[in-house]
Image (tube, rainbow, N blue to C red):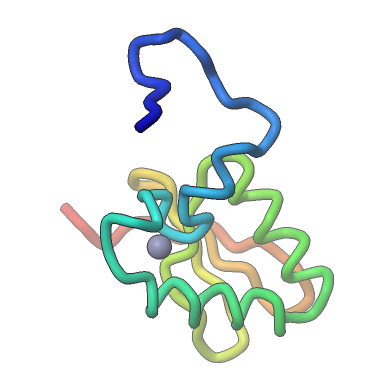
Length: 97
Ligand SMILES: [Zn+2]
């Protein structure tokens, strides 16, 4: 059993990608990621400009919420961004109040 909590070790450089879901950001072992797998498939099936834009946002902490009508929607907190098929970003305001 290994844990990095409390050891001060940060796994920078992508080691955590082995265990953390790149879509929802939680451990792959804690719950099923069927929905995440679908989003990931949609991401990899997306046109390159769109996928690149989405992956850039993922690196900034955005998470993919859904893909619909050729768009990929990501959010970070109350920040919502929709990326169209051409890779153009459209800021969307959160509907939550
Ligand atoms: Zn997931």
